[in-house]
Length: 336
Image 1: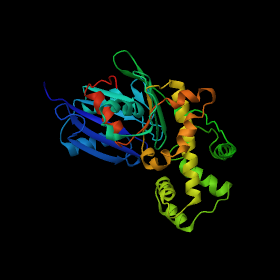
Image 2: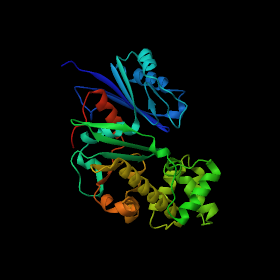
Image 3: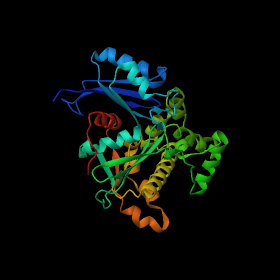
Image 4: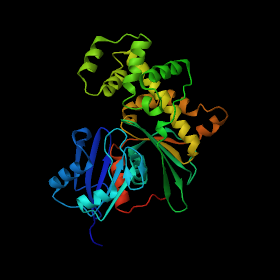
């Protein structure tokens, strides 16, 4: 069989990763891989041109997982002013075939190819063979998707479910809702449960709840380009006992659990729920405590069903890239 070269991409609001794969080397041995700061480029075309200049090897096909809705042959990147188009990509870069898929769809396609060591189990549950699968991924935004068994393989139902209305379930969450509403107008789970939302939850505790901010943390946040990792690190630093950071991360974890449970109910994901994106692996000590699963299972009369749903965290930060490569190389998402 002739060796096939394929370009795969994970296109996010913060970071874009491109990698060149060959059918001969497979999914876990890219010939070349480069990461780019998305906002440093006017569009995807310029990144592809730079990548091919460095790789010095053309690709016949391409598949890009993009953080935003894909409609027909065009995608809109939610947190970037980019609108990549299949026909334009093919014309500009000589691809015989180019594919655009949602980044959560790409993440899902990676699941059957990842080793067991790339997952951490939060709830063992009772997995139903060929039951639907759900993926929720907080990163720059909040991505969601459901995969449904189609008889011979899993098929994605792409979603922008992270942008549904936020539903508060406690007095604190009602106050948080008002805090976000005053700032943004429409309040979605994506606004709150994402890398962009975490610092606003922190600000809620600081300015609305009047919880003291340690001087050392204020200095770190002022110096940081992205405050979210600083807040998470402060919450994880047990010796510092930082109340405001702990409260921020615990509330974030609880809200993430609630929305993961919402997605599990809507998709009836008896095959399992997966947490992807860049944030969950950093929050493992909190996710493994009772807060997340208590919120996930708190669904009234259907709580018994939620206890049966397996829940896992995807640890591999390149899952979306691997999934996009699997699509381009023609690998199916068969039964798990």
